[in-house]
Length: 428
Ligand SMILES: Nc1ncnc2c1ncn2[C@@H]1O[C@H](COP(=O)(O)OP(=O)(O)O)[C@@H](O)[C@H]1O
Ligand SMILES: O=P(O)(O)OC[C@H]1O[C@](O)(COP(=O)(O)O)[C@@H](O)[C@@H]1O
Image 1 (cartoon, helix red, strand yellow):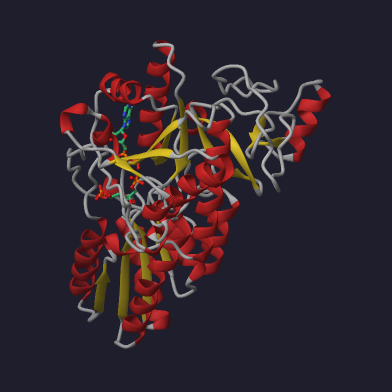
Image 2 (image 1 turned 135 degrees about the vertical axis):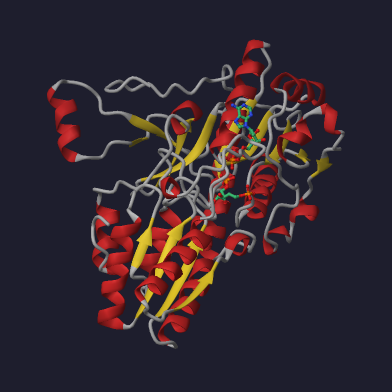
């Protein structure tokens, strides 16, 4: 996307046709846009230079649709790590395709992109109003998920063979990259296949998407571990509660959990390196003053302090060293060396925070994400993910969403609020 130019870079599959409008549907005007850089000074700079500030296209139903609902076949796939709300999104897509557009042929591909590859011999499942009616009550995904690369050409062969018109890919940055590869291969073959992403990740690390579904539920679930760590820390002389939370390269879960559950004194995130010496000194000081401490550490934090594992998971993501048990051992050894008795309790809620069903707010969010994904696909958009930006749902081109990982800015407002509310020193 070129800055300063109203260029949505969302390829349209072809000419739209006018559908019979559905009762009660509010159509979005194609000229309705959402600014993606809403910094007032920057906007003024654009306007002074007689340039248009960069926009996202607003999501929502269009007055013209591209696909004929009577002939359309759709596919849904869920990939990567589990995340609260996956079933809500599947349900929302099926319900919206049927109720808003009358689409009846909807298939779920089992176990992520494996389900699209002929070599795994997974059989696509037909998704009906009945089969999805109550799935939002369960965590996980009824379709199953997987990591690991699949041959893009083989995946497109399957879509072509099954005559799928819209593929909904529910996943994180890896899934979006896969979706982009599928959209590009389909485009090269001249196939009319739309690929629409729905942003799933508890890490909340997708660029140009303010909030991914499942993140809020994961933060809420992390609360039980923090409350328990605090209780344990307060219940012992020189008590320390140490909680490790998921968050591979972005510390949003740790930071928001620290803000939501006010008992955290140290929040360690991947974005902000710290020294063991600085951290242990700060901890020592806190124990002297208060007699207890609660530490939350994001799984990707402090990796430079440990030996690199060199291991990758099936999708090529680095397997991190276990910062939780590393810190536990270092803290115990440090205070033992000082001859000071401490009482450290280490809690790793691990998969518990992501395998639960979505909370009410995430559930409602999933419903709207799913519906907007359907509207985008029906209108013929492709190679895009539904975003959430400035209080509006948007269309974000996948290349833009995966251009960089969204991280906490250590000099930004969020991190400064975390520092202020935990009392943690800015640098350790
Ligand atoms: N460039 C790519 N082309 C094709 N498939 C990809 C690409 N990048 C990732 N994938 C696939 O997307 C799936 C999900 O990716 P992963 O990183 O595990 O999860 P997430 O989508 O949650 O980030 C995996 O099967 C992975 O192999
Ligand atoms: O054990 P797994 O399935 O590889 O998952 C671990 C990772 O999954 C996450 O929950 C996020 O996964 P995604 O990137 O797939 O959304 C990370 O926080 C964590 O590092």
